[in-house]
Image (cartoon, rainbow, N blue to C red; front, side, top):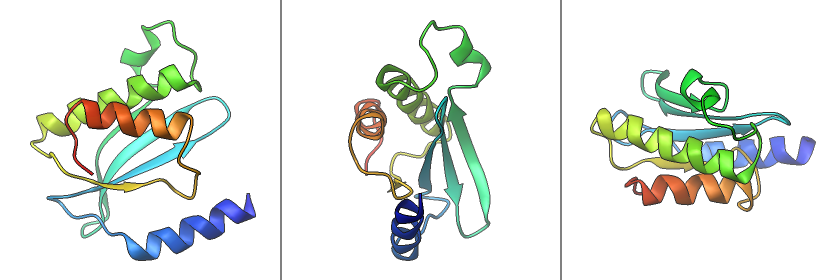
Length: 115
């Protein structure tokens, strides 16, 4: 846990989101996956998606799997498209880019986000 926090702080110094290009923040717990687009200039969240959303509960996928990450990635991309946002800054929060995180990012790219 301490190593991830250290990586997170090191990454966070280098990246910054804006209203035109928000920062896409990912958090993984043992049971769920959470994603939100943040405008760092105002300090507010633009849109968010997670495996605990009501529309996600309708599907039969468990909360913390690669398939769930793909669904959340596609969902956040669709929400950002509705807000007319096409490019983002990807903040992996110190997690290693593989497995669930990679599936989420690739699903968001396939849905039309650029990063």
